[in-house]
Length: 170
Image (tube, rainbow, N blue to C red):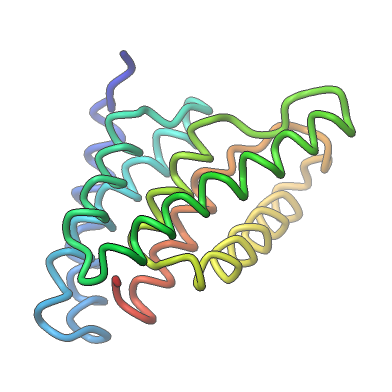
């Protein structure tokens, strides 16, 4: 079982005050703590994926369960989680069928499922769009060839944080 390393946790701890300040500005008080928890976990996952190319289950599934348990609308959270997983699973398998190689890991599927539990299925197209724009901008800034492997988890986490701070959790 892969765990988070100290650098992952230090970055997340350093970002926690910023997340708290942003949530205090943009969200009602009852939503601030859940968004802070989701944000710290998402940041930890993003850093870990950027460093290792791997999203540990302890983070993705923990974020998923927190989203399901803390949701104000459990039906929407369950549907969002299921839809998030299925959408990326289908895209990943279509990519594999078309290109003959994997384009996404199962951790990405689980992270989008967790995001769906937090923001709902209706917000997932926006999250995916934000993640894709972020990925393209990152690869362009780094001048990386488009066919080289790039961790998608950090961009999914960024999209989740943006939506949580914009609309709040379910």
